[in-house]
Length: 136
Image 1: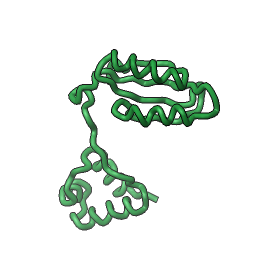
Image 2: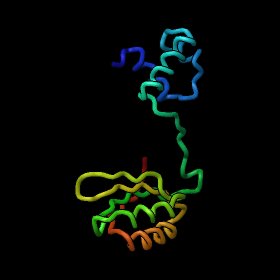
Image 3: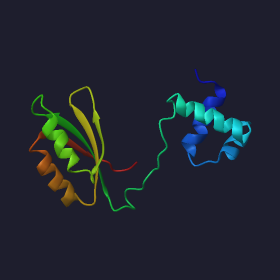
Image 4: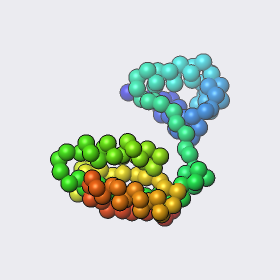
């Protein structure tokens, strides 16, 4: 069970996962080594699974952000999943979901032309419903 200090640690690391243990300790009123031990306990127990970065996709040249509801044509999803592996530069996340569709695919594209090419190939494997992200 997580206590108040553990929750504070998670909050601070969510804001800045590169924070030093000394600075983290100061923010949560612990010594640096005590904060480090708490973080290690959270990692070992699987509460903290990893650390990541946020990438500005627009600055990387990906101006089109799409969410695509995927409707498989059969119970065999392997062709769709194999297709996605060939499209890794564009795929951010592929979520298996419940509801009307089978998957929710999040993608980024440098242009609407690349999106169109992707959708033509995608339609060989599945049906889809496309939504474009206007603003985050």
